[in-house]
Image (tube, rainbow, N blue to C red; front, side):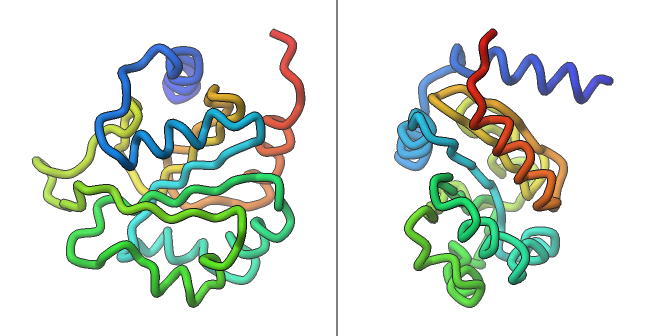
Length: 164
């Protein structure tokens, strides 16, 4: 119940949060203003759960099935592993027109130095996946590896016109 209340609070308060601090946050903040659905995915190339999402039935299939959905991967907590471009290239993501890769300038994995918020939202686990439309966060998955049928349903729900 606590997670649900946190999700609701984050969803409602996101537009009121502080302005982005880095060029990467500014770029993502601009991208999520799109009238189309935009997914922001925080990940790291060393993370087993993140790697598990790079299968043929994972992000590659999702991008092909959803050409009208923009997906922004933000590499965080990477340490010395770089932005993960080789992994993403091998998975066939870099050539997708609706895919973008950004490297956050704070790549530290050390507990007292690592990134703990992005766009004013808490980052406590990777992968973390946020779904936006028109500058409003519609859903936040802050607990790890995605199940793509669930992501697909959330995207469909986010594409619907919300009357409230």
